[in-house]
Every structure is written in C-alpha cells, then in structure tokens.
Length: 112
Image 1: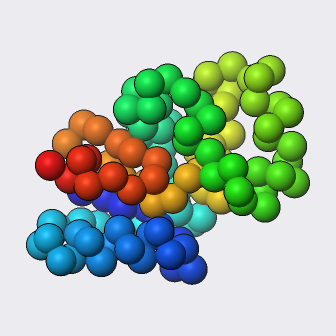
Image 2: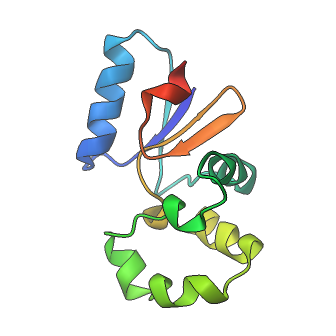
C-alpha cells in the first residue's frame, strides 16, 4: 500500500494512524513533491464512478486560484488527469493505492 499525504493534513494523519493501529504496512509519499501518477489517478477515477470532481481537493487554495471549478467542464479526462498528476495540491487527500485500487480521500475499504 502507498499513501500520499501532506504533513499538515488532519485527514492524512488520521489515515496513517488508522493504518498503524491496524498493522497495515504502507509506504508514505509526500503528495506535493511526488503526486500520484496518471495510471494511479485512473484507478481512483474508476473507484469514484468516473466522477473527476471527486479526485479534487475542492477546498484547497490551488483549486480556487486556478479556477478549476469553471475549467473542469471544458477539460477532457486526459487533460484533467494530467493536471492532477502535475500538482499534488489539487488532489483530495490522503490518496491511497493498494491491490490495483486507488482512492482519493481515506476509506478503510481500500485496505481490505
């Protein structure tokens, strides 16, 4: 399991704590410095039922400053995933990858 986190993110800290308490081995990556790859984002998109908006940190400053809400309807899926892969601040955290599945935001279900 890989978990992409931001040190100052409460949700990320809670997810890491849960993984430790449940003795689930993981590798932690800094989401800003090493954003998830496009194939990993594709997995999360599948898990989100194809809803691209569910991959975004919609409360983040980058989301607002870049006007993503207005741009998203005009972007293709590939353009959107490339944008996310280039800016970890835009991705909903924590981002987990495990066993051929991925999730933007923490869900213990991905750990099963």
